Length: 398
Length: 195
Image 1 (cartoon, rainbow over the protein chains, first blue to last red):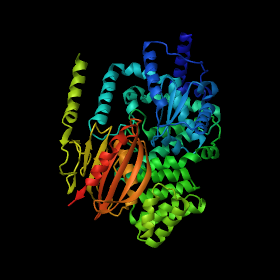
Image 2 (image 1 turned 180 degrees about the vertical axis):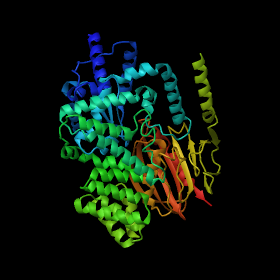
Image 3 (image 1 turned 120 degrees about the vertical axis):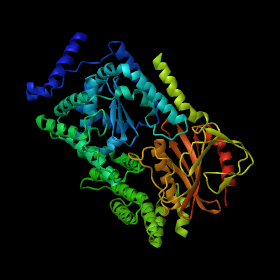
Image 4 (image 1 turned 90 degrees about the horizontal axis):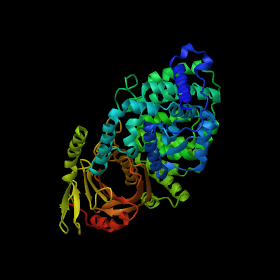
């Protein structure tokens, strides 16, 4: 059985390694599903034990969004992408972190950041990312990588532990948002050639499921554009054409996007995008995900992000977020723009009472005290129980 | 063996900051905070963490800052950040602006905490006017979910005097610790004076 599996895996890898030797149809062929897999040897069992422990922490974490509707929906896209039998092996954890990332561990734990969900415009884009992550899992890249780096990984792991401990207990403020995963970070990062293999198999899933393949390249172009806008806004050169861009372990995003675009042209996928369905499912969450994003103090990147999600159709949530973004930066011209964004948001959704608050504060900071006071008064009528109502009331009286 | 040695040396390299981290603050004596003209007079003993969280900040604790964290900020002016930059290039902290409204202070703090401390969620539960340092100020309460997946509660009092922000803040785990030392923090706030 295991010999057979190895032979299958080897065959799959060979076909991925020399794509031009095969016909276009075989090139993206999805291998036959092998059923439930159990770790085979000591290395793999050890790795799974670590992943199991990691998952136990994640399962109880307050950061995980457990809303059944959202979880069922994301799972349905994964299942549509890789097939029902394959997706049965995956537990999905939606983690409230406003950063574009998703990861998958060898035991079948898929971690999806809310920052990733926010950046997707349709089901095809999400399918391209989920398919890619699942491909790492199916190709057992973690194990291969672990064997390659095991000699160095003990030290890396300990460095990570000590670093994390120092950040938490030493009194220094540090960015330790991935504390729980810090130890395994060294093990779970994939090699560049593994990324390419996962891209190939990922396209296989997308094609089989009938999604529009070019969506994959769209995702990576957007990642680059956003990083560019962040950099430009902060007055520094963009890292677009550098050797290492997003993750050091991944191919550069430019290379990635080009490769994906080329592959997308070769694969015989469908043209399904699922934009409306995706917008509907995410609608209850967009406001919260955007609020998390706004706190990151990244004006250029967030402005690009809001524009990209909006496309040619701004929703009230997006206009409100843009108002908050501009008001947050607070240059005199920003405050004028912010008031306008809030006004347009209210045109679309008169019940979005928080927009009255934003408009009032923008106007007051612009020196338009009477108009600002009126807007705040409207807000307080609509939301008398707001947490900061007492504070705002003093501003209205003045 | 060599690996153990390396680990130990790394450990020692990390400890000095932790070992010399605290200085005792005596009870019932006025003490200036955050290198400013603001004084407080505690009625119990506190520990001051000698590593400053920011240029215009000071940190006190009783049992360690993860369990009770008191922060003083004074004379935070135009362009200043609340905390020391963690990664100025990739994740710069928001800068204070003298024309900020008092009601904007909670979101300024939120952004600063999220970036510098990796706080995952921040929710203001109340905000009301208050007199602080003999000026009109804001008192707000909030809840956070830390990078360590622990729910914390916090309360802060702030005022803006001549375009400079002054703030005192207390944050502690929602379970047990917040309530236990809330009164001690309130006492510090009540004793705060500016010359």
